[in-house]
Image (cartoon, rainbow, N blue to C red; front, top):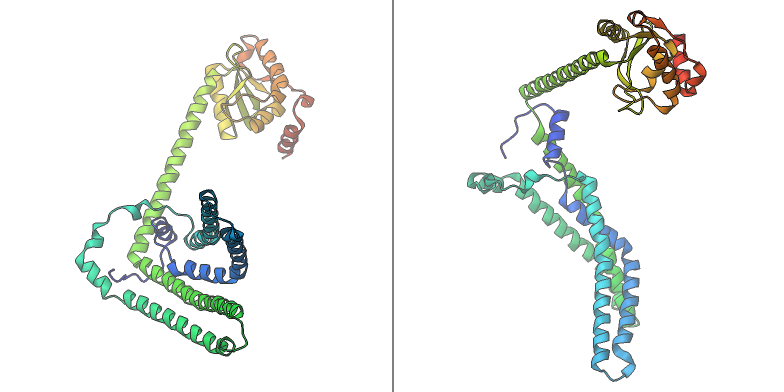
Length: 376
């Protein structure tokens, strides 16, 4: 890998991109040493279960000296296979789960298809030679040597500490086996602790390497910042254009409305009701301040009646989104409004009319918000 000439810390965007591509700090040995350590701590419980299963199988296999028939032999073979399977599952299942959890804790759950693609640059003799003569193989060799020294040192210390009891003439063979098992577990435990310390150091080294690898030059930081700000400006411009287009479509729909309910300049809501095709009136357009004025102007041009009813206008503006039917709780009060509009004369439709809805017919939770807005 060519030397990174960057002097600036990687930006958040580059770090996120690297994580998506699988370039993250990790130590392959961290999970291994944690599994070894966890197994050494749980070994007494596991060995107790293993011992009981082996003893039970031994009694079955010996059969109390009974004659061995083909049926009996088959049954003992099945029992033996079941015992082996149970023991293997007892040891392998927790280890597999623990390995997965440790790796997830390091890098999270990430699927990186790019890592599965065939990369012919990996077959480059030049890159492979540079990798061979880089510092990485030397570091790996040093780690292997340290691990070997740890195992030898711990083994020697445990053996020296227990040699007297093992060579005692009064100790029974069963006690010797028990002490050997205990010493073996202690060996695994101490080795796991020291190996875990090495793995943590290796993980810290890996994080440092990844950070150095992702460092950027000042020009790269400037270019990425400019690109990011440009992308944000483009997205913002697109959002504004989408909102403006949506607003224009909404204002155009005012001409299709049966009535515009207003308050009188601050809020305006356009309603449409077709009894043959709609179960309830639909809000075609709504808005406040400037948009409310625009809705009223469009309604006048299209000859749509404008009714001044502040409580109902605000209730509809609060409770019903554009394009949605009114809720059942507002159906009665809106029905009274439409009945009022339908009885207006042709001339009266071209002038603002006043209507006062019954506040008791507006749901309490909506009415509280309406009164709060009117108070301000």
